[in-house]
Image (cartoon, rainbow, N blue to C red; front, side, top):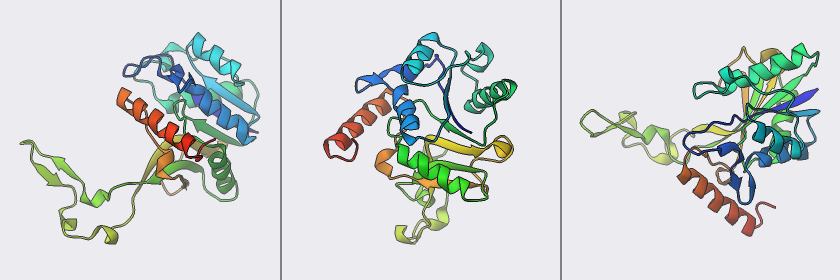
Length: 232
C-alpha cells in the first residue's frame, strides 16, 4: 500500500493560518491533496493536523484525518519528520501496512501529479531509499559570498573568483514539494544523501512560501503559468 502524509498544523507565525489561507481562491492545502488524488498512487491520503478547521477542509477535499495530532507535535519547535513519524506509528498501531510513503508539503501549489508519479516510479525501480523534488540552483554556489563581522563581502569559495560560470559544477536544491520513502528506510537514511534520487523540476514550478512576499510572488507566478497554458 502507498500512503501520502500531509503535515498541516494550525499555528503559523509569519503567515497566519498559512496552511488553509486562500491561494487564488481556494485553501492552499487543497492543491496538495488534489495532486495526490490525481496521481492515482495512494490508497490513503492522510492530513496530520492539530486543527479542527484544517481537518474539515482536508476531509471535504477527499483526504483522511483519522486523528488530531497532539499539541506536543504541533508547536513552533516541532518538525515535519516528527509529525510524519507520529502518523506512521499511528498507522502501524492500527494494523495498516504500507510499502511506500510520500510526505507532501501543505503549501506547495505548484506540485504536479506527474512528478509524484515520476518520483514513485524511479524509486520503485531502483535500490534507493528515497526520492524527492529538487531543482537547479539559479546562480553558481561557488560564486556566492557572505558578510563578515564588519559588513564586508567575503566569498565562500575565493578560489573560484575568476572561474567562468560555465565551468562551474551545477548545484541543486530541495524544491520543498514531496519526499518518497520506502517503509524500511524512512527514518534510517538521510533524505539528502547517496540513498536518494532527486526528481528535477523546472525552476518555474518551484517557490518556497515562507513570507508574505513569497506568497505574493507565488500567486503572480501561478497566474502567469495559467495564462500561458503551462498550468491547467
